Image (tube, rainbow, N blue to C red; front, side, top):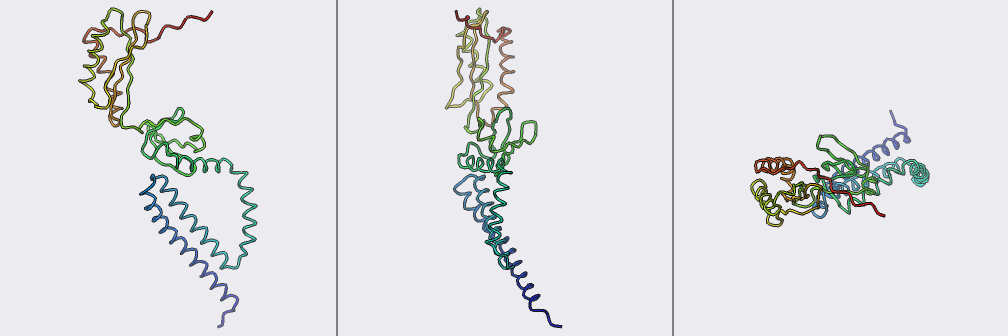
Length: 263
């Protein structure tokens, strides 16, 4: 039984198109891994991931175009139709395009990397992924928050873990009867007993202002980034116990007196 030449040619073309498409997917995967490995040496993991994805998508597009050409499709007509479709989709997906462009700016500006703890607006969390359209944060109560890249680019981003040390400020309201200079020495001794000493930054006691029944001081303590949360939770309580044991009253309001009204 003979096979119609037209059918045979169609089978051959289909087989070639399939091989081209499968080959492009395989080569795209290999090229993406190479691009990721090369980019990781020079760029951040997020930038390396974007380079890997773009490389893979480029091979996929080339594979699809080659397969369609092998099947006899006129790519010029398809390109024209694709252009019209792109315009239509562009109007419908302006937000996605804006997020994509904003994501590229963020990737090259690098205000944070995966693993950093950042604050955006009212949301604070650890960066778990940096994608083309959004960034995902894991909050301290274990919630996943997706923040669009456009929102990030337009917002103030506070990176809480960029530097190796952080400062904890503890406000204190001290009665007028207390000897402020002696109290300063006592506060610094408490810091030395409970907080690991850092050579580059020393604790300090600042005078903030006068209160109706006392003065307001601020005790500033520095801690390593990985220890900051523990210090923030434990040190103020330890300081309160030590002050209470020393007989120092801290029941004054922390509110500063309001400035006199302008005439």
